[in-house]
Image 1 (cartoon, rainbow over the protein chains, first blue to last red):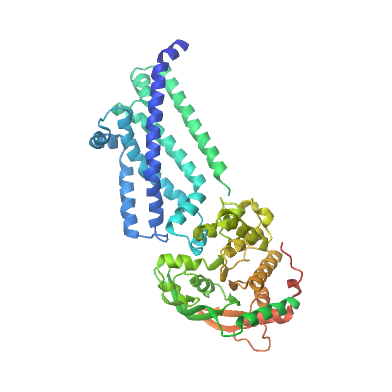
Image 2 (cartoon, rainbow over the protein chains, first blue to last red; image 1 turned 135 degrees about the vertical axis):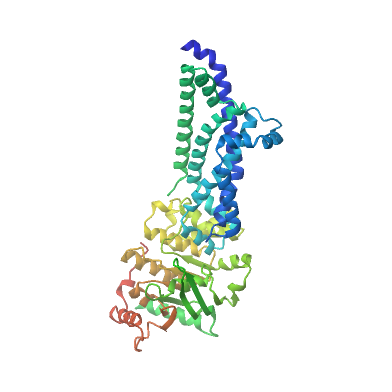
Length: 220
Length: 282
């Protein structure tokens, strides 16, 4: 057992690195693009500060459309786009493109949902004090929803850890890919168990860290 | 008795000279869409003037339009028709940025306090100051302390709202409303979620603020007995119209509305309401 472990350790470490790279890129893009998109979706909703039914509906439709693609289809459909951005359609960097594309609308919806949890009265009080839309976002919404936003990011990270396994299809590598290639295709049960154990540990870690941070940020 | 006299004295001084209307509502109408598609007319061309330094109580049954009227003073509800003038400036015609700075002069308190849960007491009171004023750190801190002193919560600056009682939260919201030195304080059922003793102490604080800082107060409340003592003028709303308005101290006249009679009764029977005396900051 120990021997096999040592034999596959380099493979495993490489795969772990690839997984973390894909996850990191995907989360950063999701926060940078999906976060503002979620805030916008919230602000455009009826009864909110920038209420714009038409624009809100168009954005909502776009988000729904992107989210309705099965991930493996999105992966293939985005190949030309991926090539244009990364210069290749193979490897962890290339796999990060469709991962990020799926993560952005997903995170946007999670953010929108969390902002709806901020009590209306608090927004009203800020309006009565003369807060601008910009101040409303940065001084009220993000402050009051911060704990929920961390939870949303935790959910996103864990979902996309498992999505990243599919990225093996385009040679993305990663732990999930290792499990499929060695554990599943080659009937290497030891490898299968090991990779899954690593994934379980990763998920537990992410959840633990996320929950702790969320609790610390919550003063309610 | 002494406090009541002091109250009236202040009222008379501020009303002396040319009658200065701080708030002027002209023909305010407001209707709402109901879920079933129909429209509900909350206010019918209501006009109301409030002088600087006055405490005006808005009373009425549920749905009479008192909250809508109060909330139209700072355009939290934008009237369908009519003008809202504060210090002679019409809020309804202001561009967004100008309205935001006009709102700095209108403090507001709510039934459910509406404090930011993730900010401590100090940061909640500093919130309106950070929105508008470029105060340096020491001046901001001094102003926040000043306001917390007024409501007797200087020692709770580091607490979070979740660690405070309802009465304390409402005091924080008073301090927050006072932070930017407003001319007007709007109170939307500020004591409806509080017990009787806390209610009296909150209303006593409001009265002190009116006397010592000269802040004009418009208050919506169901506490008729308390309003009878607190207000210089009471406005009774019925079905979105002003049914009558009177000075509660004028106990000789006959009131035309049931609520008016009830309030007048409290003023008479409650006498000069011993409850007002000896009320300390809880």
